[in-house]
Structure formats: structure tokens, C-alpha cells
Image 1 (tube, helix red, strand yellow):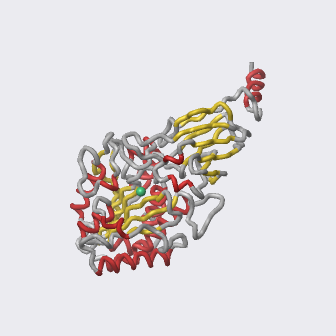
Image 2 (spheres, protein in one colour):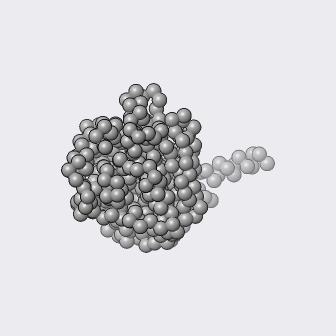
Image 3 (cartoon, helix red, strand yellow):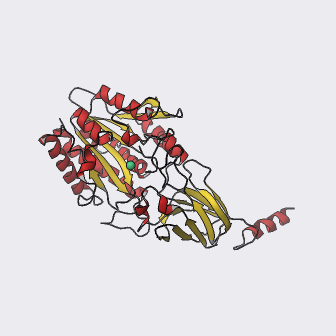
Length: 394
Ligand code: ZN
């Protein structure tokens, strides 16, 4: 029996074996794809599905199995209808065979279809819009952070589907302490925010780092590593389980439709805010950039100068930051957006950080593009920039 089993196992692992069917699946945390046709490796046709309760779509994440040594030609046939389809120009999809190392693979876009070509050396591989970050990873990360004696964890509310909304508090509050709020992943498809958080919190919680000691003495940090766990689990691009785009809910957050923003904003009112950074990814602009809130009605000279100072500090500390490319300033006065709403409500420096899905074009990496590792580095560098402006925040 053993010999027969071994022979069978060898037969199904033979390159090009007809016994192994190609299979495409997204039935896992953060997965998103619909299979149109997957009968042949060189003709796999897929569609990205919409967010569960809205029209947005662009995030994709799926596994192709039964593919060892087969050249797979994968066509995402509705790519041209995606929410920010221009972002597929000069874009290369992310691929991993081991769910650890994510690399860019041969990808082309003709204005309608996104075509990905890849020949795996193992039985299966994953393809995603950007390296994914599962809720399991998220829980492990939060568990590690809250074990650090410098940190504490508060569950400040619950999502539409009843998941915990975690707030990590680093340091203790006090009258002289500056209050810094940092949030990420309001848009669940922007997983780069979670990798950024790993770099940021890794540095903030490093007790051996003497520079950071000063920061912790002069500020308390309130950090929401994932604002949208429901959308993250569902593989949504932009919305929560109720179809709300959380970064358009800040003017009037609703307990039923956007309880995530409702909870965070209430806690902000309790703590006050001297600094706010909302971490995102932008589908179309291939650069890291800051979108400030210096055009809100109450922006004054002090707030405008703080924004300039922060940009200059981040330029100094990060090789992956620039200020030539970004959003038009009219975007900044929309008070339903977190950064603008917080700036207007608390008269403080409040910004959105955007990272690219493809690459930071000033410093391209042809193997990995903009990657989890570079997100982490930028997170650590952002802490240096914040520490340099903390004395002038209030
Ligand atoms: Zn976003």
C-alpha cells in the first residue's frame, strides 16, 4: 500500500500532470475574486467582486493551486471598471508562494483587462493587489504590543459585525503631555497601513531606543492599528460591512452605519488631540505623500507652519518620502474626512499619509515594488519626524 501511495503522490506532483486540476480560491480572510473560468492554466479568467454593500472594487487576493511548473495566464476581465482603474497602469501584481515573501510578477493592463503571468515552482501561489494583512496577523500583532509594559489595550467599541475595535495606548497621559492619535486602514484594501504600524509601533515600543524615550516622556500615543476589521475580513476595498466609506463619515459618524468612527471620535473628544495621522494607500499616485488639512476654515499660521515642518522633517528622515506629488489642496477642506475634521475640531496638526500600491517612483524596486518592509521603514521614520515636532505641537 505504501509503495502505491508513494507512486500516486509522485504522479500527481509530476510537472504538467493532467491529474491535477487548476483551482482558484478566495474563501479565506481578506480574499476577493470571482472565477469566470479556470479550466486551463493558460486561460484563467477572473473578476474582482464589489465590496459587500457598495459599488467600490479593486482589491483582489486569491490562491491558484494545482499549478506547479505550469505557466499560468490570469486575466482579471473587469479590471477596467475598477474604482481607480488608472492605478493598474504601470502596476505589477504581488505574488507569494509562502505567504511571507511577496514579489512583483509580470503584469500588463490594456485599459480593460489586467493580465498576470506566472509559473510557480510549488503547487500553489497567492496573488494580491498588495501584500495582504489578515485579521489573524492583526490579532497577533496587537497581542505582542499589549504585552509590552509601555503599552495598554482598550476595546473602545465594536464594528458593525461585532468585532472588537482595538486602541493601543502608549505612555501615560498628563497635563504637559502632547496627545498624538494615529489610525490606519479605514480603507480595508490599503493593507500597507498595517505594515507601517508594525514599523511605527516597533520603534515606539523599543525600550532600548533612547531617542524614543524622550518622545514617550513628552507625549501619549493613542493608536488604532485597524479601523475597519469587518472590511478587512471581507476583502473589501473601501467600505465597512454596512457599505460606509469610513473616511467620509467623520462629520457625522453614525452608531449603526459607522460605529468604528463613532467610537474613535468619541474617545478623541475625551482625550483631546494635538496631533493626528491617518495612514492610507493611494491606488493611482506612485509616491508616498502627505495630504494636509491646512485649508480647513480655522487653519491658522501655526497649523500651516506645523504642516510644513512635519513635511520637512519626514523629508529629512525618510529616503522614501517626497513633497512634489500629491492631492490638490481642495481635497483638504472636506470635513467628512478624518484629517480635516480632526484639524478643524481640535485646531491641531492633522494629516493623511498616503503610500503607493505599485511603487515609490523616486526610488523604484523592480523585485518587490512598494513592499511591507519599506512600509515598516517609513513607519519608523515617521516616528522620528513626529518626535522632532512634538515640542511645537501646543
Ligand atoms: Zn484610503
